[in-house]
Image (tube, rainbow, N blue to C red; front, side, top):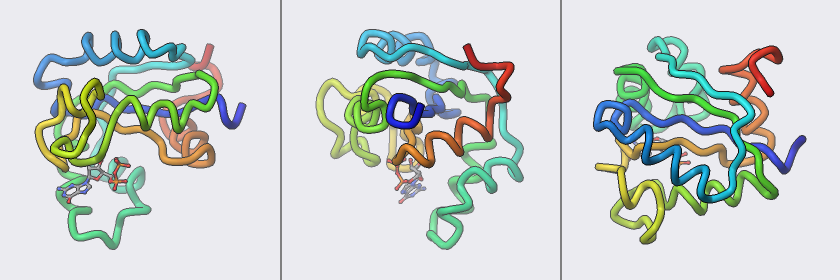
Length: 139
Ligand code: GDP
């Protein structure tokens, strides 16, 4: 499956701001199929584990607090060249630099509270999908 799947989270800011439906519509309109999806909330421990790769970055604590601050929508998405196609759809990390038509341009409020997560490699897409979903939760 590597190469055809990516993993996303609609982050707590976008959920709080009522953007779940609009973001899922942008994802569907861009041609992604949903292989797994759930409305869930990470504990601080889980968010710390999910973002362990950023442990040494100065914003790690803020990121963990934010990502465990409320519910998220987690999903595994499928499309050709999924990781790159989804990174293009979500736009730059900092919404001030995100291109027109991207999810972050439309819904992110800051570099930290930037509405959506998208895996940065095929390898991480599999690891991140496995973090949130069992085999029985995929279709
Ligand atoms: P992404 O791959 O575009 O999500 O960006 P990164 O992998 O560089 O960072 C992961 C996540 O950490 C981002 O999506 C932001 O939520 C958060 N983040 C990145 N840079 C900053 C920052 O300078 N400050 C804060 N508070 N959060 C940041």
